[in-house]
Length: 207
Length: 207
DNA sequence: CAAGTTCTAGCACAGCCGTGCTAGCGCTAT
DNA sequence: ATAGCGCTAGCACGGCTGTGCTAGAACTTG
Image (cartoon, rainbow over all chains, first blue to last red; front, side, top):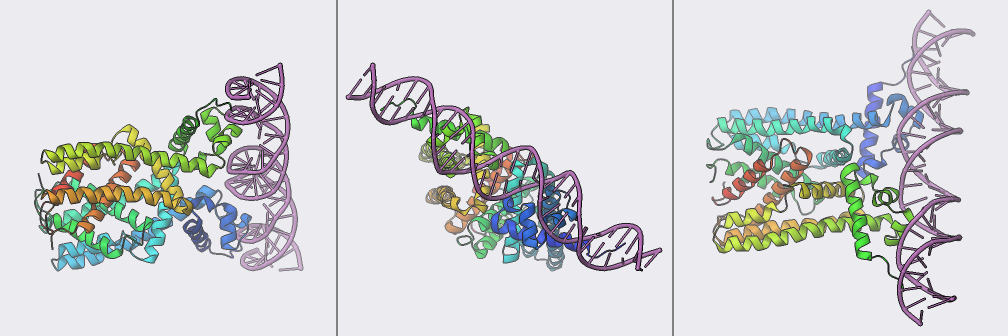
């Protein structure tokens, strides 16, 4: 039983090719032929590892989620370290920042992710995987706020569910702006905005 | 010189057809043939009013902007009325709410707009028109905050440029969530989040 | 060495696409 | 009435798409 190539590796390499294309020319350009050309393979080879185009794109999408998930997991370690030192806001910042495209690598990820999300708007078959990823970020927001509340860094009068939605929306909005106008939207401004936002939560809920 | 149809009207009707398709099946489905079918015309007719597909989509896009612009303009009247009564936050709410897809009509607009924005990510030719619209919303955020600051409803220690970015990002994030998960994200939650956000600005900047 | 399997390569098909183009219908202004 | 123009209709072309399929190369195992 001859095994010449590592399937997992090949699939990853093809996902990489998808990324490069999507980042450069958008999802519609990620045709089977295009991916094959980008990866230096033939159409037939590509289809040997992915039966249909949907399989290919689905796999490439999941790799984005996995990558971000691992990074945030790593950030969670940093978070508990800082939290142990009693600096709640710093800990939350360290964690939440990981979800923002503040460096080149994450910007690429975000671009790819945005392109996929866009596709999803008109291709509801992909909605499930997107929903799944959303849930992840939402949970991170919620857990961060819950952690801060425990430390007294979120005022007791705050509605946690509401603040979760607000923080989540802020993060998505900031990501959006970093993506669409990285010139105007600097990493510094974004970090400061996030810090101010968390700072405000220490005060009592207005109204 | 026979004039049988009103050009402006026909172009609007075609833009409407584009909207319906984009909302239902996404931008890629808005082909010349598809639009013609949706509008009950032939390909040739469509191309009589729009020389190329890009012209057609560009026109349809501008109609979204115009419509939103007019609505917000109307909201501005309401704003100054309430502002005259000294209720700054209510005035700002009335204005800013207009940019959010809180009813069916605006939800449709937002869906169409999102689809176009998505397309723009990979088709930079459309970036100009998008930038233009962004500038509009950003200005509204800035002016609202400046107005509130004058009334003393934004604390003097706040950095207006930063808060503009933060409010703008929040609005875009909320729009995003209303669009992607209208079930979970209720209009009430969104309105409350916005109100809390504005309420927080009355306090001094943290840090 | 031979057999068997993985992998590569790409042709073929049906179906979209945008757009150049021609042909003709129906109205209007002369 | 008739010439001319606005408008409609749709064919034709070249190019792209995903995928079913066959054929053979390359390698491992028996």
